Length: 382
Picture 1 (cartoon, rainbow, N blue to C red):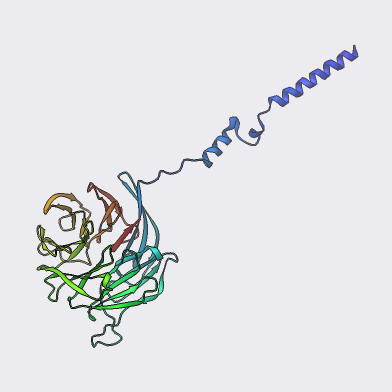
Picture 2 (cartoon, helix red, strand yellow):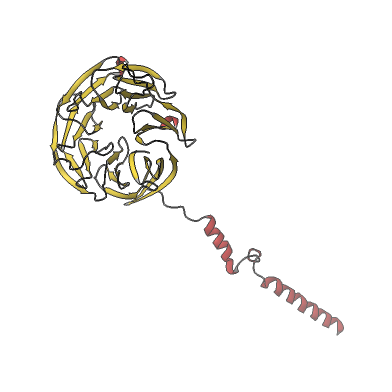
């Protein structure tokens, strides 16, 4: 009988032990929440969905004024009809900048001072201005310490050459982009050079404001001839306040805008023909800064005007449509071209910008550029 009781007690103890063991939660629950919630939360946090990829993105470089002159770089992302802009960095400058030339291959950006005397080199990797400053002695019998005015600048498509037009010396200086040393000084008799442009074959085009400032002339120095010979292509009897190049044709077509008459005119480098494209109402506001008002692409012209708060679309010599831009204020600033999908249209006074889609002329408004109270110039690239 005692033996049976011992067996019965042993069975009860074993049953209780098994019930205790199998009644516990799994091992992965012991240090966590009930019903596997911790594992679920961990899974969610470690494999949370990535933010959506933008439909398009690019880099925007801008020079302007905050409390002091600054150079800023922004990451711009487009999601449908929404633009998200994030400032990557800002560099305080000791000068105002009137033009930006980005050299992507060597990760440097040239900033041309608004007094037209110096070219500063910004190192994109180090995020600081280089100790070296590019300038040119004035010559022409002036004081040797006097610096010449740099009236125009351009880079070649392969970014191996930089061209800079000098006012007093009446030359175009060609510099290598790797060390910024002058390799050739091209003399000209074209008057005051206001615009330089390299085509796809590295031919260098020069736009002259004319000796009296009342005409616009187009000249070319052929790259195949080592830029040793300058030929005049054509001219037109209006001054150019803003300019752009339509590079969609085998030879570029130069588009100009005269503010006082509201006239858009062109000079075709292939045919040497010049003429009026369209005449609008004269611009009511005085010239401010160095406006870039024209965008030209595949025979279509976009004209940005802050006085009437509109972007005018011109095609086939006719004004085909207008886009209202109430945010335009002060100097008009356009940028873009090449393979970019959008053009930049910005306002120097309000620091607001929009992106104009190339194929449909659809404007997406992007708001104010962070950290700027006025905008002097801008550049965009992928």
